[in-house]
Length: 219
Image (cartoon, rainbow, N blue to C red):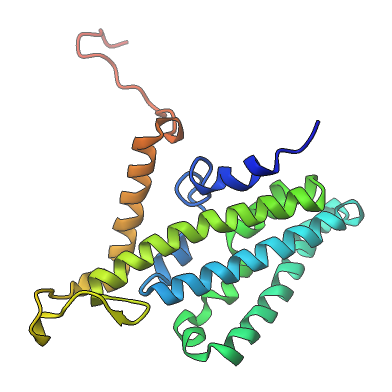
């Protein structure tokens, strides 16, 4: 049966989004979305690492003993992360400082390890890399939306360019400093998950407990 690469690529964008559906990678979604630039840089970094790691792990999957498979996966991911981190420090030093330790933490990001363990280890390299790229795009979509909202309403800027005229400069907009704090990212992410699951009810989990009816006799 032919592999449906289109579905593998597009499903993680909305229907199987790793953040809104599987709640993976939310630490960086909360931590690095104070501006659109840092959110975009983190998104690209994770997508590149995830795609390359998936391709490498898939290519050698038949030669990795089960007993050390996680160690091998972490070593591969960590090696790619070191390269990405060095590139950022060399060419995007300011953004690298803003991202702080979170680029290094891609190594243990549950999204990266989840896709390499659940998909790349069981599928051929082309399908594994398409799946990884699609999940990276889904992750990136969430980070860019949250990062854009936080920077716009927290500073009135996008990519450091003033978009909303500030009241202190004669405009009408007063920045909401709360948007630059971690709780705002938490609430925005929660609102995004709620919105997606409201539009696509199939994403909502079945209730773990059904309360008894009001007139139902107690056992």
